[in-house]
Image (tube, rainbow, N blue to C red):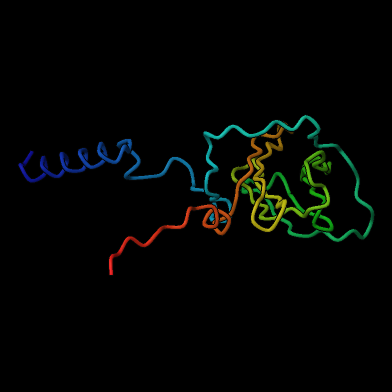
Length: 171
């Protein structure tokens, strides 16, 4: 092996060690990054959410002619998710034709937003309790359980909470 190649390998390994990256992270990502709409400040996979004992995914049927809003389909095309009137959230199994309504989440009068599939089984969405404060949810639709429920503020709210900096300039 030539000296130039050895130096290149050492440089790459050193940089990945300094950045805390595993060796394969430089060539490919293990999983796709979160969609921009769900990159909330303070919300990460390591955060343990608040348990919601009233959460359920109840099998239901839809009235004829009901308007489905914000429809999305997972990548493997097994599930569809959609809202009705903004405040009701449904998941449909495409093979069986069964429809489940997500129930028991707080603030039932507030609309759901930013529906997206994080994977073939994980549905992510938000529900805002006020203009600058919301709750991020992740539901495993296959096991029908709530995975994550984490409150978060938006950037505007966080900026308002910072202490004002005093100008220490002398005249």
